[in-house]
Image (cartoon, rainbow, N blue to C red; front, side):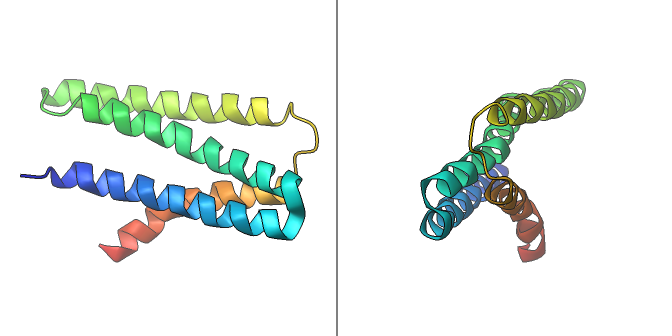
Length: 119
């Protein structure tokens, strides 16, 4: 039997990756290598913290409620910290374009909202 929550998380992560790939390809065509790199980094800044959070929550499955809630808080804190660190590192790179970076970052995060609407 397939764990429904796990498959939902897997679908959301897959849709995020798809959104990042499509938008990065679009920015590659429109703005060249610099736009594509910026877009890919924006996608990574959204995807990597989400993967961390998902793995953190997945590891707590089947444990007592207190440990699950604790794992949720630690995962969310780690996710926020990872996001800050990733953006700090990204902005150290030369020739980063803000529009592709933020557009793909926001688009990748918006996948969660569309997933809620589709349920």
